[in-house]
Image 1 (cartoon, rainbow, N blue to C red):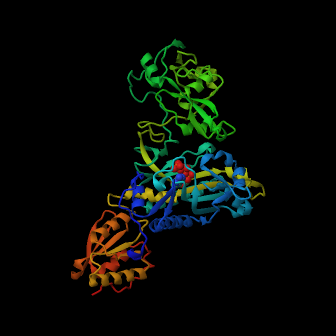
Image 2 (cartoon, rainbow, N blue to C red):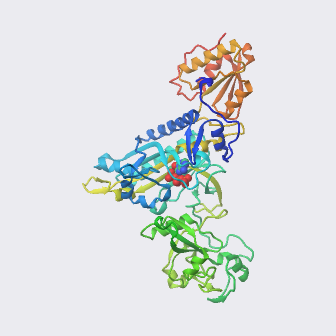
Image 3 (cartoon, rainbow, N blue to C red):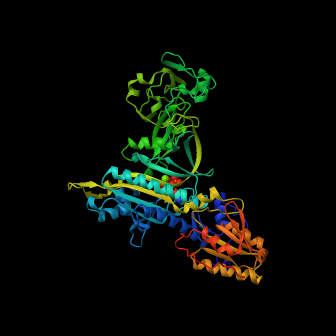
Length: 604
Ligand code: ATP
Ligand code: MG
């Protein structure tokens, strides 16, 4: 392409509401245009980069035997009603009606649609395994679309779904997809971490996220400083604590007291309780009261009160808490919200004095770290009173209570695998792979006949990559103060040829000849033929982030030109006679496709 003919509407000003560097760059360099909240147009450069990323992902998916399909973006609501998600999915699901009043949803994900394909055509175990994927538009009516393509409402995802006749075969596919995803991240030159992820209420062993490490990431990761362990904070585990992790204000000794009720007037926070008794918060039981809401209840309704008990020096992790709750409830809750003091009081709960002993009329769950806790202090469910000397295992009601891991892992906690220290990191979730099992096939009656002729539910896995999210994710890691940097794996142009003076006929002849030679070999080349200052053209090269620039200046007279690689901006003076070979050498076009028996493109 010739620059003068390309549509690259770069901006001089930094767009006001773009806070992330990647968002600013994509707008400034003319890749995208915002048209509404979370909705973007892809301009030629944006589309070009999207296509490069898409092609790389396709290569890796095809290499593991997955087959590309294209499913309807507009999905009949009946499929979502069958799976049960029509009511459960919440407001992110955009529901709409056609002129005949038929209901549809704009697909935020395609498990229902693909399960429909499977049940229509898969009859026998002989047709398994099968892995179908698409690279297509999704719509999620996100509550807070932000950061440009990072969290859009309309975005492109690679979503793949596999079908199996056994769980072992699902495990095999899952591992294979993990490897393919790792190769994608590596080819994109990303610093990333594969972490254990929240599996939702479905449970199951397998859900992993691919996190691009970046300070702007919205996810907090728990990472072991010593071994490979990594998990999303929502799913992170730690080695159980047997004692306080520090001395605290009052030492790490367990308080010694016989069981009894103690008058603690106005002592309603963990902090004041510890001060009152001069103890470490490890020996107190904290009540975290939440309002669990279902979609149907979301507005105006009270929801159901649930109390989560954790040690005083722990926090309750909401996603874990919600999953645990949903695992023991028939109809799942959508979210946990804070419960107001008024609401607690209307339920007869004494805010600040709530404890698990003698707590009636509300559902409660204890953290598993409390199961054998001794010498604890907890609310007495009576205004201004606490219970002291509580050995949890001695109370029948607590023996029968529900225990689960609901704590938020803290920095400095110990790794569940190697017992070394854990720390936090920030990550951008670019991929998520998931063992679905029979969730959708059971609901939607997608069955196959096994080798004994018995009908079984199809066993499924699902695998997503945020294709449009990868653009900002790459830029967050690689871009510099001059503009976009894409690295080796995906390129906007293999080379941009920049003339210092387009009026110099020698320079122009050399450049045009080289340009044509490169074009003829399928190299993605841009000739900057604009009648602009050299500095201006260099700035555009840096801003749009072409892989490298070939600079043709006065030195052409001595047979020299310059190659500048965008990543790192290293310069290399080369012989003008070698320019073609140098560019071919570093191009992304497979070597056997580029003809090598070339005359060199010397204009002299
Ligand atoms: P998040 O936690 O960031 O909201 P998610 O867990 O809801 O993402 P998945 O359902 O796992 O997302 O979707 C698979 C992939 O799609 C994600 O890993 C992410 O890369 C991408 N993705 C999800 N939501 C968005 C969005 N609003 N904008 C851009 N990409 C998205
Ligand atoms: Mg996810």
